[in-house]
Length: 192
Image (cartoon, rainbow, N blue to C red; front, side, top):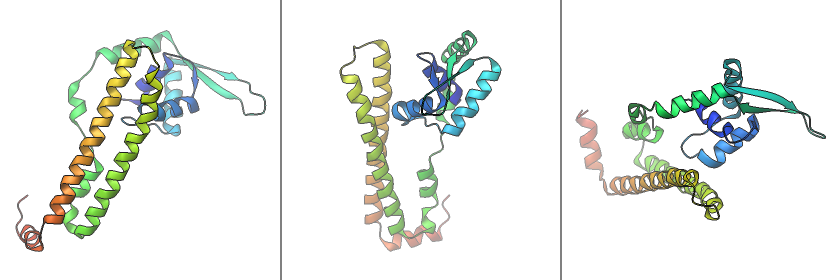
């Protein structure tokens, strides 16, 4: 998926600056798609050249002027086309850094791997904590389709992080129960 379609999705609701878009990304959907400010502005420039968005400069007193973007009819059409042209195969092409490290972890002391997993779990707990304000914000909202879709993505994120915590705990327990003899046997036998 391209960041561009996320930007178009947010712009379909209201005009926003690049800074506001980056903030919106990271506060609402950052648990499954993050955006760096440099990426946001790069894609906004590209979309403006393609006619998907338009911008105008807003004069501010006491602050630098800012550029505010809005979606065009062509941009709405691109967003609609993207929403209906879903290909499930792309969602199964994953890159998970912790798994790459785990695959090659036999090259490091077991204690380091356990410490890495503890650090990873802490990150998962922090990610779950970042979802809580969004849940809180939705408590007083009317149950519209938009709110239901947002709650669905939040539920996915929470389940995903909890699964990673569960996996980390199982792996830590497995490593703690693993004796040196098993480690030596695995190093001698090339089973993969």
